[in-house]
Image (cartoon, rainbow, N blue to C red; front, side, top):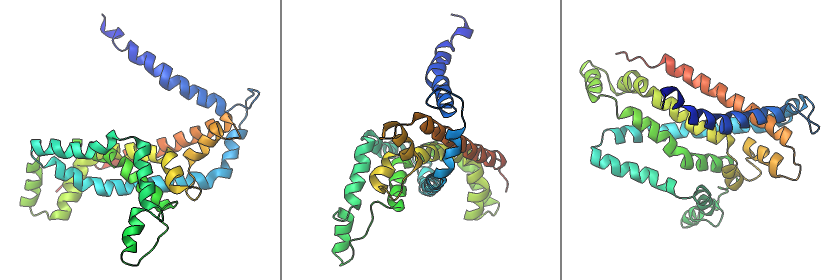
Length: 269
């Protein structure tokens, strides 16, 4: 078989399952129920600016927390011996084998007023606290579910960093902060940008976590899009417009993140 035909199955796959659905989203976003061209669907999105902003803010906060927690864990994993490294990676990945809904539902039982957390505080005469159906509960659910997606790309990048570079920086008088800021961070920037993308994108468009842990207090854009397709007010045209704008916002955030990565990949002592 000629080399030029090897990529044919992948091209067909992309056309059917990526390009064609995107074309449908664009078509529905700029048409009305009669199939006529209109920008009314896009103009109506200003009514939901609060929901868009809440989604971006909560997703950004969850991504930052994931990065803060994942960075030291990834560095620790990258410096373990190969045998121990495999065991620790298995422990991190193991919860991902459980159904996403079950993992989120477990947090509902933990955070509710009669849940285990409030019962624990009750032993000390505290509470019950309103832990569930809050923005904090949604962020907690995002961090718990998407943290491995931050750890894995960071680990994959850090394991390739030669430890002699860190030793060289220390020999040249660099303290812990300088080693982190001028050696580790620039060299691990590809993993950081990949991890941010893998966490921010699903966090921004999630609807299961916000519905189960946030309720009506943390209504996000994913919930709003779901209502347009599955709710009583069925409107795929407005839902497609929301999806299109969300996709543009995510692409803008990703381009900004990649811009920072291009600037910070050089190591300096």
